[in-house]
Structures are given as structure tokens and as C-alpha cells.
Length: 621
Image 1 (cartoon, rainbow, N blue to C red):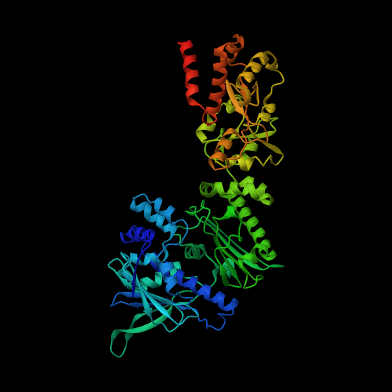
Image 2: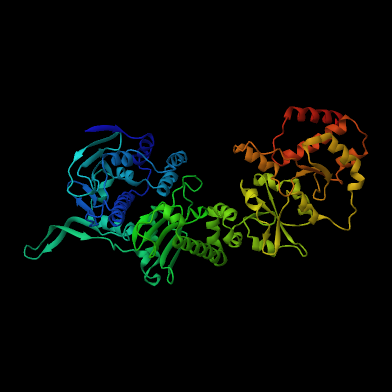
């Protein structure tokens, strides 16, 4: 027998479990049955597609056995099984991506943390909520040796050789005080029906059943084995036969989520391609949604045979929050990830599935606006990612995404923005390049406020990249107020051009600032501020340049902004009247530096800025 320590993250997680942070301890049975179902899925797939496994008899079942007197419960399956290495890898470590992030998010508030653990899922380790000792006996399919893994969930685990007549795994729980409530056959059946009724394999419960003995005129206990789940592929049944509760049960069984899904979309396609899809939108965004190694949530079946559940080819990346099932009649059973990437059948299913999901979301947005806002609160950002890459569905995505605005509280759609456009207004305006508070106070918005024009506040860090490639919404142009060319829309033909009278000052400012600016010109976009900076149409804003460099892109050329000055501002009028001197030079740099600060761009030399500011202050006091 070998004694081993748990991985650090396992120890941390077990401590949380042992201290009863989990508010729903009955989850242990759902998790262990789901593990058994996965093991059966894997073996069934191998017996159909791998020559090495085709001779292995496959008789799928999951057996629960209860001993009320000894307070033990076992969960056994006839699945793929594990050898010694697998037991160490799967039961001694946590390989699931996002574990460290999950642990870092724990707040210390038991109630909040219990919900967090519920969303994350704890798999096998949930057994220690209800057991003070767990034994796992497993034999891998195709191998002769079996192994026993034993742990009290505190210090570590032990592994030793064992006996098992067939391939598969048996988990034996020695129930603790918390877990003894589950040493009850009726309770176990209720939990199975609640969470695992639609597991595609039969689940049997063996227990002592009380039956009335007419001859002895008393109730006697008889050892009985009964199937306790429906064991049907719910997604293949007609929608008319299913209730909302059926869909919710399957969702919780598939995902391990405690909360009901926001929506689900069930589709059966017939014709040149036959397939069934059932997609769910979780009520809360998955914890690994913004991690590079996110876990996909759509399982692929072929003719009800599970193929894989971690293929990122099934849906585009921006829909990675979707959970559910794709069941095809036309894919080969031995389909691999490499084949999936080039398979025309899957490409057609994927294309149709994306259109279906987006179409359903559009219907919900139109008919259930309150529910749709709950969706947007969780998934607006991934939808924006879709705008960048999914050109085929860009128009639909533009209708689905919601925006902050200078006109309304909360979020608004582009369709609503369009309905509020002024008479004669041809463009929809937006601003990017910083936090919401920074953007709302930007000098670039002054003329729009004065003219009562709506501007969208795009404060996500990737908004500038996404929307720089989108120039239209329907018949209307989408224009960034950060760009120099946008000011052409704002010119009032009735107002005289003030650039000519400002030319001496503009030339002086440009000469002073030198190669720090591309140009200095009179502005039509400023109302209250003396200056601002803008970028050319094809160039990233100063804020975006800073962000790209912070992300490690060191080869970005130093692009020069254009400085615009407000011809009507008192500072500018005073500078125009002043002769060339050191004060005018200081003022030129201060106008430029304050414009940079208002854009959230750090100054190259703050000490020099302070010296100039002090000289100007000295003159004004």
C-alpha cells in the first residue's frame, strides 16, 4: 500500500467541503452518477470505434447499493474504469481548468461561497460532504488488475491492489453524521429522479424494501433491486411530450448547475441532414468564460452515442457559454477532432445552430425584454466578440448587443438609438478609449451634448478593435467621435470658418509641439474645453496604443495625434492676442498635456508638466 499527499488545490477544496460550505449536500449523488455516466459513455464509444475494445462486452448500468444498518452507500458502474495512474491523476489532483481562479474568488462568506461552489462543480470530491471515508475500487477496461483508492479527505490517500470481476468503478461511502440522512431508499430515489432521471443508462437501487407479509401479519424487509430512472434521451423526444421541469432537470444533470437555465432552444432538423439540438443559456456566466482554456458546454452525440464533450468546433468561441447537446444522424461514430474541423456535415449543423440560437435570442429580446436584460447582464461582452469574427451574422449580432448611452439610463439597442436620431442626422456616434466615467466627461462629447445628439459609450477594452471594422448599421454610418473626420458632420454652414484667423496661433502651437503631433487645427467639436486630441480614421486612439503596448506589442509605431483647439475659449483668445514668448510656449504644452490626460494617457514627463504648470500659476496669482 502506498500513501500519498493531495495536491495543494485539492486540500484547499476539501477543507471547504468538510466545513460544510456547500448548501446542498445532496449534490454528491448527482456528481457521482454523472461520473459513472461519463465512464459508460467513454467505454461505449470505444467498443464501437476502437478495434482493441470491440471484443469487450458492454452491458451499461449504474448500481446504487444501500446498507442502512452499516450506513454505507456504493455507486458502481460498468464503464471504462481506472488503473493506478488514473486514480492518482483524477482523484489526487484537480486538472479542471479554472480551479485556482475559483479558489481566488472565494470571499469567506459561507452563503456566497456555497453558491460559487455550486456553479463551479466539485465532482468526486463532493463525496466528502457526506462521508468520513471513501473507498474507490476500479479496473480499467482491457486490463486485468484492479486497484483500491482510500481516503478520509484530510491528509491524503492510499492505493493498493484489489479485486474486481469486471471493468468499471465502485465508489463506497462510509456516511458521516451529515450524510446519514441519505441512508434512506426513498430519499435516494427522489435525488436520482430530481437530477439524473434522464441519464441515458439505467440506474438501479438495491435496498431493504418493507413489504407486508399477510401470513405473519407484519411488515418484513426484503432485499430488492429496482430501476429508479427513466434512462431515456430526453432530447430525442417530441417537444409536445416534454414539460419545463423535464428540460430543467436535464440541464442540471448535464451541467451540474443548481440554478434553472434562463432559456432553452430545442430543434429537430429533418431533410438532407437529420440532427437534434438542445441548447441552454445558463442564468449565470460560467466562471471560466474569459479564460483561454475555457471548458466547452456542448456534448456531441451520434445516433444517441456520446462522442465528445470538449470539442470547441461545435460552436464559435463567442457562444462558449451555451450548454447542451448536438445529436447527429449523419456523422461517423469514429469521428475525431481533426475530422470535425473539416467535416461538411458538422459545418452545416454548426451554421444552422448559430442562426437558431441568435434568432431565438432576437425573439426573446422583442417579446421578453426583462428576461433579455438578464441575459445581456451576463453575456453582452461575448456577443461583442462575435461582431469581430462572425461576419455572416453581424447584422443580427448588432441587433442583439446592448450599449451604454449619453441619452438613456441603463442599456439600449442600436434600433432604439436609430429611432431617436435627429431629423437630418445620418450617422450613429460612439466613443471608445477608457472607463465609462472617463468617456462621459471627455471633451469630445461637448458639441454632441450642445446639439443634443446621442453618443454610445463603448467602455469595454476591446470595443475600439471590434467597432473599427464596422462602419454601418443598416443605412446609417457608425462613426467614432475619437476620429478627426467625424467633425465634418458637425460643421454649421451658417457659422464663419475661424481657422484663418487662428492661423498664426495654430502655426505657433505646431512649431512648439513639433513631432509630438501630426497637426494642430481649429475644432468644431469643443464647447467648454480649450483642447482635445483625435486620431486619423485608420489609426488606433492614444488609449488603444497604450493598451496594445501593455499587452506586450512593443513594435507599435509611435502614432501622432492631432491637437484641436477651441477658437471660442477664453484661453485660446488670450493666447492669440499674446506675442511670442515663453508663456505662450508653456501654454501650448499644457493644452496638449491636459488633452492627453483627459484621454487617460499618462504623460511622458510629469515633472516637466508640473514645472510648466507652476510657472503659469505663478503668473496668475
